[in-house]
Length: 247
Image 1: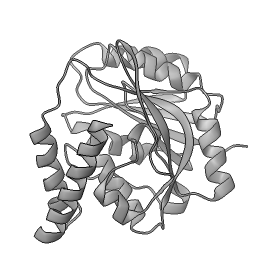
Image 2: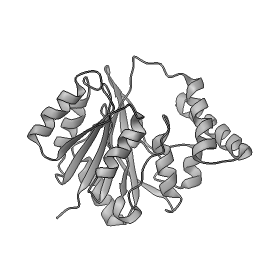
Image 3: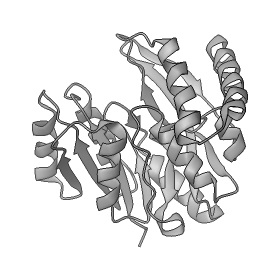
Image 4: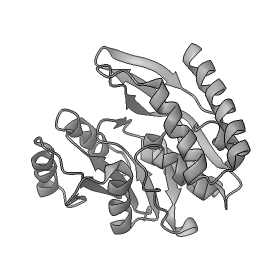
């Protein structure tokens, strides 16, 4: 029997998108999965939508936070209840292609991979955006300079690594988890295929200053780098981000 995959999904005021995300899980050609959704005190109809899905498929489980914890805390609650050999991540506004799990789990089993990720497609309400094709392998030092692992594509082997949780910060939680794993693993490996779709919120303009501020704090408070190490990583990260934005 194929190993169980625990899919971790946080939700917050996601009533406009979560049905599509859940449907992309239900459409998987790989059927041995459980979907653990932790809702972070949504004020819209998100919880009722999840309950309707859970009532018709026992593989879907809902957890509700008593207070707003952020995406990292919500993911951690689901991870704590996960029963699968593999832990996968999908946010409540993103999508998977229907062969995502089948291809990626086969890749991990065949190549004895502890942490994997894939290429993915950006999209918005007007249609498809650009393709994201990260490097085929990444180690700890390389990831410090640029987080090439899209959270919606990542899967780690909990039997090999033990259950790993995200740091309780409001931004960059996924990068913190990948770095923690890569402290003990030579590298993460990519499946060079587009297997997921990342939704771009066209109604919101990212504040680049806030992005950089959070990245600086991440290096200092989560990665534990000293000032000069932080400065080096921050400058390289900013440069790589600028190059990506031009592309």
